[in-house]
Length: 185
Image (cartoon, rainbow, N blue to C red; front, side):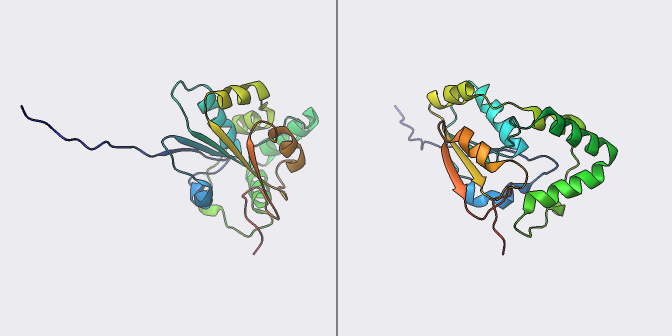
């Protein structure tokens, strides 16, 4: 009888969801990408997609990392309509201004990560509703949810996002940091 000794192989990977109008920007978040058996990460609009991915997944996810989650559910409908109109009228100008606000207070150049977004994506991110019961369900499955928010975020209302996420997640507030979670140099 021949006995085979096999080493156990453990796979480590991260599933990453990009922010609005961005592609490949996960390189900017290397310090936050904890690699585990299964880690899912999303930045801004990608945080919404990452959350829904984990919520709808049957397999276990060890860690869900939400980097500057797009949080607009406390904004008035007029805010959403205005953003969509501005995007439709001059999407190049809108995206340029949007990306400028994403980097404040840092001076990171995001040009190499630019990927033109659509009106449908913008509408989806502006109208997404974070549901506390869904967050609790994901947590009850054993998924550790970590949320990182810069206190000088110019994209979302950081104080409202902090108030929402503080009770159901592990929350990290980055002082003097914006949406891209970087400080000024």
